[in-house]
Image (cartoon, rainbow, N blue to C red):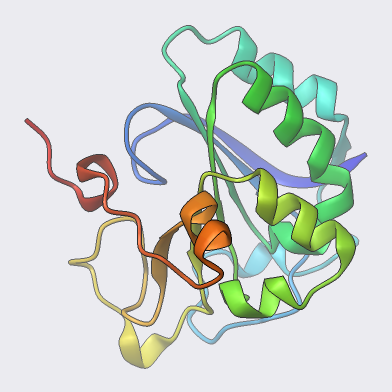
Length: 171
């Protein structure tokens, strides 16, 4: 079961296109100025199965992407893996926000590395209030990076996403 804080259908702010955003419950980072401090408590929220969450996406013909947010998705890495697998099999692009850096996740638990390996895009790093900017696409602070996960894993180093969709360049 996945402990959830909330769900936003048809989001256009958590990645390119029309997406579903899953806000997981629980976060160890407690970043000052956090956009979602109500998600910090690991005992809050409600439990949902991976299948229940998948059905929300599967029945939306406009949704082509899913974003994991929170809270901290990598605090529930093992529980999220089946959901991400189903989404990928369905052809969804899967992105995740995290307060960890890509490098920290490479040194994380087996489940964290497995979740990382299943993603397409990672927005990494803690939110830093001193680095806050409203001019960034899909990020809250300048220290955060939008990474192409598969390329990063292939090269063994954090590699920024260069797709015009993620850069906010639309035709």
